Length: 410
Image (cartoon, rainbow, N blue to C red; front, top):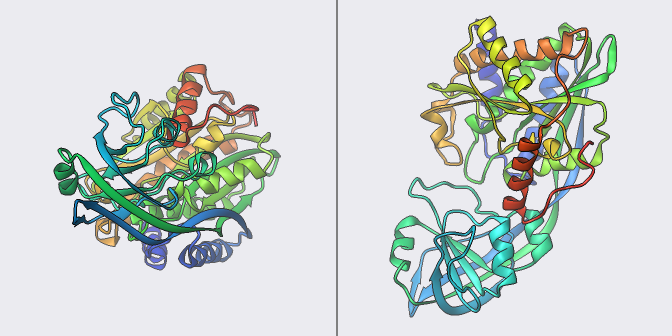
């Protein structure tokens, strides 16, 4: 155990820097991950994919002659707008006319509401950041931007939002330069000794949001998979373990989406995704995108090994979702607690990180992987029930404004 915690701390120190999708720092992190795999005797492939990033030239917001502090909402284009301000309480079903208005909304801009604003002729939008001061982007879904085009938007702090609640008219301007850049996935495999054509896919994203070293979210998950890969390299399983370290998850699951679109998924039986791990005071959880059989499977395993686990059937906003969209079920493992409230902030650093906590989580991850990889016959059905499929489709419709995908069986 002591050797494992030393190794975990070594990997954490090497990777604890901001790693936003498509940045030179993300490229550097991909190389470090490939190096760790190489040290364990595993070859890896770094696969590039193209994403859109926007460089902000300016973002300004005025009430009369008074300028208010704001930050640009990335991937909403450029433009100027002046008009009446309307506060929408329910983006799911806007209760007021937004035509030729600038819309004020609490929280993040999702693709579905962005589509509605475009269709109904809004001039622009202002989102209000939560009082906790989340750093995320802010960033519109790339799919929504590509499909629906420009609608200039900004984000303001909660205190500014309170002042805008009774404001009648505002003026905003925003200019950004959108350009394609490369992001990277790191891919490695431990071939199965007897059934190499049967694959269990293990995923974790290694990128971070801007301004954050992203240690709990998600260096913890990345490190857990590196430890598991090292273990399996020494103990080759019956079927193949594929490891996918995803880039640009924080920009809308872009790395896992790219992999799901590029690769043949027919041989992937199951996905095990690890996201949010290493919290000093974390509480272990598992979200099962699958049936009751799969939920019982992981609950019984946790009891068997004496592992405290809160498990339920539900979707999880992480890199398993593009595979669920293709009909591949998953276990989503994490550990949330007080420290994880720092996710997407500058506070998600090594101060709240525990190598001991990760080593404890790895007990479940290892036991689960061994049950799936070493079983003579794969113990679970490759199936997502209709109720879960509905949740998956609703998730993507909300985030991107798009409908369900066809050809879901991968």
